[in-house]
Image 1 (tube, rainbow, N blue to C red):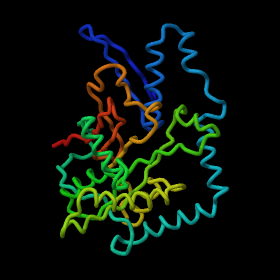
Image 2 (tube, rainbow, N blue to C red):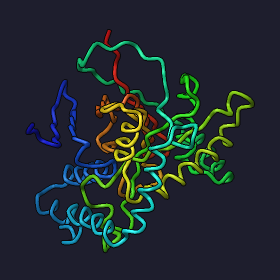
Image 3 (cartoon, rainbow, N blue to C red):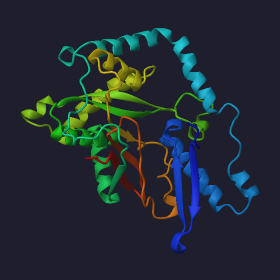
Image 4 (cartoon, one colour):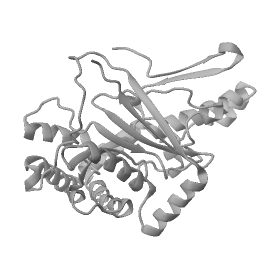
Length: 318
């Protein structure tokens, strides 16, 4: 199916300018969206093509997505021993049942019945934490030795666990890592392409039935699980693990991990501002549609030091 992967359209309804941006996330990651936003803002406010050319100098010849992909392929060969060890780890996790040390299934939430394969629309809800409150959260995280992303992930997990019939479940986490790939580190924030991956995090909240942990205590425990998964996800993508779990459970095509957490907090804010906040009130409305994703929780870069948190979920059809 041929279609334009991204497009921008500027209109002026009722004497106000409105920018509509359509983007296919299959070709890029969150950092790319921010890179394009920053470059578009520079072009939008430039006075001439000559000024725009100076604002956006050509990329280094080595700074291409093709080189990024080729670098990953070379590592599979040059680091073959580590590749085998990592894949053996996930093969074991996918072959065993959860009670034997294997990976669990996703949260089992109460769902409304959906008719067949009918198309669904997506609702996006957003909220923010004021700068003063967010600063206190960051200070507490630093004191406790946990990351802000781990804390937000934990809050999302605990809410899902409240409604889930299984307190031990699998979560899908976006994994953004461009470091160490390009010869010039400065190119990491300029290359457009999908440099991200996903990883599946084992979340065990069975202890919550007794004496629940505080949010900080739970965040420390889940952060250990996140770090362990990161250490085993250098050569293995979440989609590979999903295929293994569907083979174990004999459920081809099942949405293995439809609850997703993605956050770009901690990335270089100079190259990844909150997308399009330079255009005014942003966003008026937005939607994110991803195959086999039921809830997509996102932590977005601060705008005026406010933390922005949003999640997208499909509307139920009767």
